[in-house]
View (cartoon, rainbow, N blue to C red):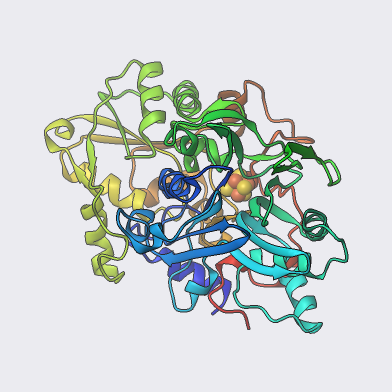
Length: 493
Ligand code: SF4
């Protein structure tokens, strides 16, 4: 299966292959008697970052205890589950994963763990390495035997081959060889380690609870366990925690930070604070700027739930147009509830989103959504709102046009499948059937999130899926190779 095939297959779910999927969330605990249970709760709060699999490795008297399973956190580690009971020890790392459909991916569930010279290492990783294929080919040629197709295992192999004495130094050696985006938590028998790549593309925060240290992808996972937010782990920082306390290292070449701007638009949970900004407030501000940039005459502002809600609130406030829940989302639709045939796909959108006819009938409606990916969902939602009696449908998008794939840990369709890559705004408007269509501008997005405009020579965020300006080399894509992210492959030829 090629990366393209696996991506397409992954997208053939109930969400019509038309949403972006964050691939992972990570969590770690150092020094708490309930480390396993805290990690279950933390992963539950990070469930939006990955719903296919959940894994936790605890350390009890130097022994790793792994529990890694397909399914939602609550299903895998629910009350009275044996998996949850097994998680003994004061130290833990955990992971939720969005992975591809198709066989063979149970072996890719993280954390990945192995015995290295000098002790065990368990690693949970959020992001994607952009030279993992190249590294893997070298490692396999030299005799390495991989058990998974996860790029996280590449990190473990590289650490295993390091001649450094200490595990921390082995991990540094490994990470100096990789390119890409990573926020990872790693556990040895004596230490918990949190690291962000030098560009800081994916989030990672540090917290404290009753003397224990916590790492989490987002602050919402600290809130659920009552932990105090201490700070973001800095781009390029390695935080090492052991019985002597916490030490901070910056072992990598310094780079300009390029945090993923899409975390503010869609991926992160609205109640999280990432990189010093509240996600909910950022989204509302994006909606306000969108209303300034693309005003329209209308009777109602209606969000495409759930992700469009904060931006729609901001739009409505700024435009002084009433906000209404004109579309109701069913939260209980299973991801694999139905077969993804064309006919059933059409039914799928009605299963997930229903029109609130009493509000829509006879109204001029502004629909606000976070993004347009392939456009199929947007088209069906516009159709649904019109069928419910709306007299005009104006579509406003809280991100610039998504023209490029992400290679830094978000499952996007291939570039040539993205609607904005194939069409200009007017063509997209016709495709989705709206009376008008507008996206927030790139400068508007920067202004909303950060207060300034985008400096083309030195942007403050990664915005590659809107600009094509990839801040980290795409080594695995060179030479006309198919678009691929190693962690997405069900099998590697
Ligand atoms: S390409 Fe887009 S989704 Fe991927 S890291 Fe950059 S901004 Fe985020």
